[in-house]
Length: 115
Length: 207
Image (cartoon, rainbow over the protein chains, first blue to last red):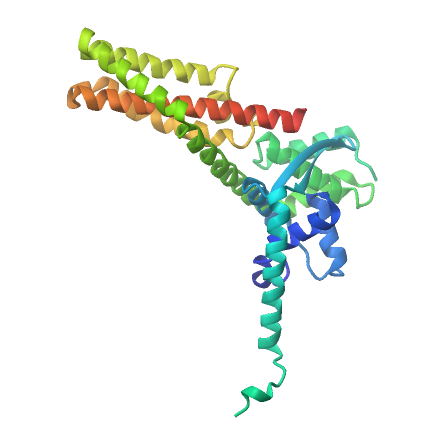
Protein backbone atom coordinates (compact mmCIF):
# COMPACT_ATOMS: atom_id res chain seq x y z
CA UNK A 1 0.00 0.00 0.00
CA UNK A 2 1.34 3.44 -0.89
CA UNK A 3 2.43 5.56 2.10
CA UNK A 4 1.43 2.60 4.20
CA UNK A 5 2.07 4.26 7.56
CA UNK A 6 -0.33 7.08 6.75
CA UNK A 7 -3.06 4.91 5.26
CA UNK A 8 -2.78 1.90 7.55
CA UNK A 9 -4.80 3.38 10.38
CA UNK A 10 -7.60 4.34 8.03
CA UNK A 11 -7.89 1.07 6.10
CA UNK A 12 -10.80 -0.29 8.14
CA UNK A 13 -12.69 2.98 7.77
CA UNK A 14 -12.04 2.99 4.00
CA UNK A 15 -13.41 -0.56 3.72
CA UNK A 16 -16.45 0.22 5.85
CA UNK A 17 -17.19 3.40 3.91
CA UNK A 18 -17.05 1.51 0.61
CA UNK A 19 -19.34 -1.20 1.94
CA UNK A 20 -21.73 1.44 3.24
CA UNK A 21 -21.94 2.94 -0.25
CA UNK A 22 -22.00 -0.26 -2.28
CA UNK A 23 -23.97 -2.67 -0.10
CA UNK A 24 -21.80 -5.74 -0.52
CA UNK A 25 -18.40 -6.23 -2.14
CA UNK A 26 -15.77 -8.92 -2.58
CA UNK A 27 -12.05 -8.52 -1.89
CA UNK A 28 -10.75 -7.89 -5.40
CA UNK A 29 -13.61 -5.48 -6.07
CA UNK A 30 -12.60 -3.40 -3.04
CA UNK A 31 -8.98 -3.14 -4.23
CA UNK A 32 -10.11 -2.05 -7.69
CA UNK A 33 -12.64 0.45 -6.37
CA UNK A 34 -10.01 2.09 -4.17
CA UNK A 35 -7.60 2.22 -7.11
CA UNK A 36 -10.29 3.80 -9.28
CA UNK A 37 -11.38 6.40 -6.73
CA UNK A 38 -7.81 7.43 -5.95
CA UNK A 39 -6.87 7.34 -9.66
CA UNK A 40 -4.27 4.63 -9.03
CA UNK A 41 -2.62 6.49 -6.14
CA UNK A 42 -3.66 4.00 -3.48
CA UNK A 43 -3.10 0.31 -4.09
CA UNK A 44 -4.38 -1.96 -1.34
CA UNK A 45 -2.54 -5.28 -1.37
CA UNK A 46 -4.20 -8.58 -0.48
CA UNK A 47 -1.80 -8.78 2.48
CA UNK A 48 -3.39 -5.66 3.96
CA UNK A 49 -6.98 -6.06 2.78
CA UNK A 50 -7.93 -9.60 3.75
CA UNK A 51 -6.66 -9.56 7.36
CA UNK A 52 -8.57 -6.29 7.82
CA UNK A 53 -11.74 -7.87 6.38
CA UNK A 54 -11.37 -10.98 8.53
CA UNK A 55 -10.74 -8.90 11.65
CA UNK A 56 -13.83 -6.78 10.98
CA UNK A 57 -15.82 -9.98 10.44
CA UNK A 58 -14.49 -11.48 13.68
CA UNK A 59 -15.47 -8.28 15.51
CA UNK A 60 -19.03 -8.68 14.22
CA UNK A 61 -18.92 -5.56 12.06
CA UNK A 62 -19.11 -7.44 8.75
CA UNK A 63 -21.28 -10.27 7.56
CA UNK A 64 -20.34 -12.76 4.87
CA UNK A 65 -22.21 -14.28 1.95
CA UNK A 66 -20.61 -16.91 -0.28
CA UNK A 67 -21.90 -17.43 -3.81
CA UNK A 68 -20.80 -19.36 -6.85
CA UNK A 69 -19.73 -16.92 -9.56
CA UNK A 70 -17.90 -17.80 -12.81
CA UNK A 71 -16.89 -21.37 -11.84
CA UNK A 72 -15.66 -20.39 -8.40
CA UNK A 73 -16.85 -19.44 -4.95
CA UNK A 74 -16.90 -15.74 -4.12
CA UNK A 75 -17.02 -14.30 -0.61
CA UNK A 76 -19.01 -11.08 -0.35
CA UNK A 77 -18.73 -8.79 2.64
CA UNK A 78 -21.45 -6.47 3.90
CA UNK A 79 -21.93 -4.34 6.99
CA UNK A 80 -23.88 -5.72 9.91
CA UNK A 81 -26.21 -3.47 11.87
CA UNK A 82 -23.48 -2.68 14.41
CA UNK A 83 -21.07 -2.26 11.50
CA UNK A 84 -23.29 0.47 10.05
CA UNK A 85 -23.32 2.33 13.36
CA UNK A 86 -19.57 1.91 13.74
CA UNK A 87 -19.01 3.25 10.21
CA UNK A 88 -20.73 6.51 11.13
CA UNK A 89 -18.56 6.83 14.26
CA UNK A 90 -15.34 6.05 12.45
CA UNK A 91 -16.10 8.44 9.59
CA UNK A 92 -16.74 11.22 12.08
CA UNK A 93 -13.46 10.40 13.79
CA UNK A 94 -11.62 10.37 10.48
CA UNK A 95 -13.14 13.68 9.40
CA UNK A 96 -12.07 15.26 12.67
CA UNK A 97 -8.60 13.80 12.26
CA UNK A 98 -8.30 15.20 8.73
CA UNK A 99 -9.51 18.63 9.96
CA UNK A 100 -6.93 18.64 12.74
CA UNK A 101 -4.16 17.53 10.43
CA UNK A 102 -5.12 20.24 7.96
CA UNK A 103 -4.95 22.86 10.71
CA UNK A 104 -1.52 21.58 11.70
CA UNK A 105 -0.09 21.23 8.22
CA UNK A 106 -1.45 24.44 6.72
CA UNK A 107 -2.65 26.63 9.56
CA UNK A 108 -4.75 29.63 8.63
CA UNK A 109 -3.61 32.79 10.39
CA UNK A 110 -5.71 33.37 13.51
CA UNK A 111 -5.51 36.97 14.72
CA UNK A 112 -6.49 35.97 18.28
CA UNK A 113 -3.40 33.79 18.61
CA UNK A 114 -0.94 36.37 17.34
CA UNK A 115 1.29 37.97 19.94
CA UNK B 1 -11.44 -13.37 -20.29
CA UNK B 2 -13.51 -15.70 -18.07
CA UNK B 3 -11.60 -18.57 -16.49
CA UNK B 4 -12.70 -22.18 -16.99
CA UNK B 5 -13.28 -24.64 -14.15
CA UNK B 6 -9.99 -26.33 -14.99
CA UNK B 7 -8.12 -23.03 -14.70
CA UNK B 8 -9.76 -22.38 -11.34
CA UNK B 9 -8.56 -25.80 -10.19
CA UNK B 10 -5.05 -24.91 -11.34
CA UNK B 11 -5.12 -21.79 -9.13
CA UNK B 12 -6.32 -23.91 -6.21
CA UNK B 13 -3.52 -26.42 -6.79
CA UNK B 14 -0.96 -23.61 -7.02
CA UNK B 15 -2.16 -22.29 -3.65
CA UNK B 16 -1.87 -25.75 -2.05
CA UNK B 17 1.63 -26.03 -3.50
CA UNK B 18 2.45 -22.66 -1.93
CA UNK B 19 1.39 -24.00 1.49
CA UNK B 20 -2.11 -22.49 1.67
CA UNK B 21 -4.10 -25.50 2.80
CA UNK B 22 -7.32 -24.60 4.57
CA UNK B 23 -10.42 -24.58 2.33
CA UNK B 24 -11.84 -21.20 3.37
CA UNK B 25 -8.54 -19.39 2.79
CA UNK B 26 -8.09 -21.08 -0.58
CA UNK B 27 -11.62 -20.19 -1.69
CA UNK B 28 -11.07 -16.51 -0.98
CA UNK B 29 -7.60 -16.32 -2.50
CA UNK B 30 -8.59 -18.38 -5.55
CA UNK B 31 -11.31 -15.85 -6.32
CA UNK B 32 -8.90 -12.95 -5.80
CA UNK B 33 -6.24 -14.43 -8.08
CA UNK B 34 -8.82 -15.50 -10.67
CA UNK B 35 -10.30 -11.98 -10.74
CA UNK B 36 -6.81 -10.52 -11.18
CA UNK B 37 -5.89 -12.98 -13.96
CA UNK B 38 -9.14 -12.34 -15.80
CA UNK B 39 -7.88 -8.81 -16.44
CA UNK B 40 -4.85 -10.19 -18.28
CA UNK B 41 -4.54 -11.71 -21.77
CA UNK B 42 -5.07 -15.35 -22.78
CA UNK B 43 -1.70 -16.65 -21.50
CA UNK B 44 -3.26 -17.97 -18.29
CA UNK B 45 -0.53 -20.34 -17.09
CA UNK B 46 2.19 -17.78 -17.74
CA UNK B 47 0.34 -15.15 -15.69
CA UNK B 48 -0.50 -17.63 -12.92
CA UNK B 49 3.14 -18.60 -12.57
CA UNK B 50 4.11 -14.94 -12.53
CA UNK B 51 1.52 -14.12 -9.90
CA UNK B 52 2.55 -16.99 -7.64
CA UNK B 53 6.22 -16.10 -7.96
CA UNK B 54 5.60 -12.45 -7.20
CA UNK B 55 3.23 -13.04 -4.30
CA UNK B 56 4.39 -16.34 -2.75
CA UNK B 57 5.86 -14.77 0.38
CA UNK B 58 2.94 -12.43 0.85
CA UNK B 59 0.46 -15.30 0.42
CA UNK B 60 2.25 -17.38 3.04
CA UNK B 61 2.22 -14.48 5.49
CA UNK B 62 -1.45 -13.93 4.72
CA UNK B 63 -2.16 -17.61 5.39
CA UNK B 64 -0.64 -17.32 8.88
CA UNK B 65 -2.57 -14.13 9.60
CA UNK B 66 -5.82 -15.79 8.50
CA UNK B 67 -5.13 -18.71 10.87
CA UNK B 68 -4.34 -16.35 13.76
CA UNK B 69 -7.57 -14.37 13.23
CA UNK B 70 -9.54 -17.64 12.98
CA UNK B 71 -7.85 -18.79 16.22
CA UNK B 72 -8.94 -15.62 18.00
CA UNK B 73 -12.50 -16.16 16.81
CA UNK B 74 -12.45 -19.82 17.85
CA UNK B 75 -11.06 -19.14 21.34
CA UNK B 76 -13.58 -16.35 21.93
CA UNK B 77 -16.39 -18.78 21.09
CA UNK B 78 -14.74 -21.47 23.24
CA UNK B 79 -14.76 -19.12 26.22
CA UNK B 80 -18.44 -18.33 25.63
CA UNK B 81 -19.20 -22.09 25.59
CA UNK B 82 -17.19 -22.68 28.76
CA UNK B 83 -18.99 -19.90 30.63
CA UNK B 84 -22.51 -21.06 29.75
CA UNK B 85 -24.47 -21.81 32.97
CA UNK B 86 -25.43 -25.28 31.74
CA UNK B 87 -21.78 -26.05 31.12
CA UNK B 88 -20.81 -24.91 34.60
CA UNK B 89 -23.53 -27.13 36.08
CA UNK B 90 -22.23 -30.08 34.03
CA UNK B 91 -18.69 -29.38 35.32
CA UNK B 92 -19.96 -29.70 38.89
CA UNK B 93 -21.77 -32.93 37.95
CA UNK B 94 -18.56 -34.44 36.47
CA UNK B 95 -16.54 -33.43 39.53
CA UNK B 96 -19.16 -34.82 41.95
CA UNK B 97 -19.37 -38.08 39.97
CA UNK B 98 -15.58 -38.43 40.18
CA UNK B 99 -15.72 -37.74 43.90
CA UNK B 100 -18.48 -40.34 44.47
CA UNK B 101 -16.59 -42.99 42.44
CA UNK B 102 -13.47 -42.19 44.45
CA UNK B 103 -15.32 -42.59 47.75
CA UNK B 104 -16.86 -45.96 46.87
CA UNK B 105 -14.33 -47.59 44.52
CA UNK B 106 -10.98 -45.94 45.29
CA UNK B 107 -8.44 -43.79 43.49
CA UNK B 108 -7.34 -46.22 40.75
CA UNK B 109 -10.90 -46.80 39.50
CA UNK B 110 -11.68 -43.09 39.59
CA UNK B 111 -8.63 -42.19 37.52
CA UNK B 112 -9.35 -44.98 35.04
CA UNK B 113 -12.99 -43.84 34.65
CA UNK B 114 -12.06 -40.18 34.21
CA UNK B 115 -9.22 -41.03 31.83
CA UNK B 116 -11.57 -43.19 29.75
CA UNK B 117 -14.08 -40.32 29.67
CA UNK B 118 -11.31 -38.07 28.34
CA UNK B 119 -10.26 -40.66 25.74
CA UNK B 120 -13.93 -41.05 24.80
CA UNK B 121 -14.21 -37.34 24.06
CA UNK B 122 -10.99 -37.47 22.03
CA UNK B 123 -12.47 -40.34 20.00
CA UNK B 124 -15.64 -38.30 19.54
CA UNK B 125 -13.56 -35.42 18.24
CA UNK B 126 -11.69 -37.63 15.77
CA UNK B 127 -14.93 -39.19 14.56
CA UNK B 128 -16.66 -37.77 11.53
CA UNK B 129 -19.28 -35.95 13.58
CA UNK B 130 -16.92 -33.22 14.72
CA UNK B 131 -13.85 -31.46 13.39
CA UNK B 132 -11.46 -34.31 12.79
CA UNK B 133 -8.25 -33.95 14.77
CA UNK B 134 -6.43 -36.13 12.28
CA UNK B 135 -7.63 -34.07 9.31
CA UNK B 136 -6.93 -30.80 11.10
CA UNK B 137 -3.37 -31.91 11.80
CA UNK B 138 -2.43 -33.96 8.78
CA UNK B 139 -5.00 -33.40 6.05
CA UNK B 140 -5.66 -29.69 6.18
CA UNK B 141 -6.88 -29.54 2.58
CA UNK B 142 -10.26 -30.77 3.81
CA UNK B 143 -10.43 -28.48 6.83
CA UNK B 144 -11.38 -24.90 7.62
CA UNK B 145 -8.84 -22.54 9.16
CA UNK B 146 -10.41 -22.51 12.65
CA UNK B 147 -9.68 -26.25 13.12
CA UNK B 148 -5.98 -25.57 13.66
CA UNK B 149 -6.71 -23.79 16.94
CA UNK B 150 -8.47 -26.84 18.41
CA UNK B 151 -6.06 -29.46 17.05
CA UNK B 152 -3.28 -27.42 18.64
CA UNK B 153 -4.88 -27.51 22.12
CA UNK B 154 -5.78 -31.21 21.90
CA UNK B 155 -2.14 -32.01 21.23
CA UNK B 156 -1.11 -29.76 24.14
CA UNK B 157 -3.64 -31.36 26.49
CA UNK B 158 -2.71 -34.93 25.67
CA UNK B 159 0.72 -35.03 27.34
CA UNK B 160 -0.21 -33.57 30.76
CA UNK B 161 -3.30 -35.79 30.87
CA UNK B 162 -1.10 -38.85 30.24
CA UNK B 163 1.15 -37.68 33.09
CA UNK B 164 -1.85 -37.41 35.41
CA UNK B 165 -2.86 -40.96 34.49
CA UNK B 166 0.56 -42.59 34.85
CA UNK B 167 1.84 -40.60 37.86
CA UNK B 168 -1.26 -40.46 40.01
CA UNK B 169 0.81 -41.10 43.16
CA UNK B 170 2.16 -37.53 43.05
CA UNK B 171 -1.28 -35.95 43.42
CA UNK B 172 -3.93 -36.13 46.10
CA UNK B 173 -7.42 -37.41 45.24
CA UNK B 174 -9.18 -34.04 45.02
CA UNK B 175 -6.46 -32.46 42.86
CA UNK B 176 -6.57 -35.40 40.47
CA UNK B 177 -10.37 -35.32 40.14
CA UNK B 178 -10.26 -31.56 39.69
CA UNK B 179 -7.57 -31.78 36.99
CA UNK B 180 -9.40 -34.52 35.10
CA UNK B 181 -12.69 -32.61 35.37
CA UNK B 182 -11.00 -29.53 33.90
CA UNK B 183 -9.45 -31.53 31.04
CA UNK B 184 -12.70 -33.36 30.26
CA UNK B 185 -14.80 -30.19 30.30
CA UNK B 186 -12.27 -28.25 28.25
CA UNK B 187 -12.15 -31.04 25.66
CA UNK B 188 -15.93 -31.22 25.58
CA UNK B 189 -16.20 -27.45 25.15
CA UNK B 190 -13.73 -27.63 22.26
CA UNK B 191 -15.72 -30.42 20.68
CA UNK B 192 -18.99 -28.47 20.95
CA UNK B 193 -17.38 -25.25 19.66
CA UNK B 194 -15.65 -27.08 16.78
CA UNK B 195 -18.97 -28.65 15.81
CA UNK B 196 -20.68 -25.24 15.85
CA UNK B 197 -17.93 -23.74 13.70
CA UNK B 198 -17.92 -26.67 11.31
CA UNK B 199 -21.66 -26.32 10.79
CA UNK B 200 -21.36 -22.56 10.33
CA UNK B 201 -18.49 -22.81 7.82
CA UNK B 202 -20.14 -25.65 5.89
CA UNK B 203 -23.33 -23.63 5.62
CA UNK B 204 -21.37 -20.58 4.53
CA UNK B 205 -19.16 -22.25 1.94
CA UNK B 206 -21.20 -25.20 0.75
CA UNK B 207 -24.79 -24.07 1.30
